[in-house]
Image: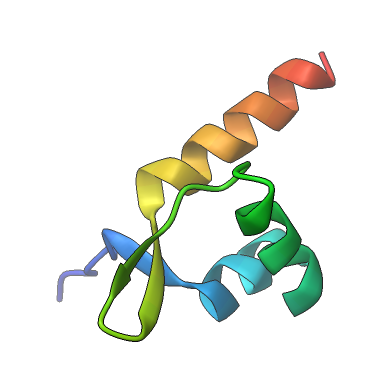
Length: 62
């Protein structure tokens, strides 16, 4: 059985992964710290954008 890794995540999925509140997640999006795109009325975060955000935070704290 293979596991499918999503290419784009929903906001709730990203917030769960980061252990952040919904409002903090949307704050990151509004501040352009987390790249997103919309498909119809749905907002999605590319998995590589999440990885880039985490990498940036790690470099800031190094």
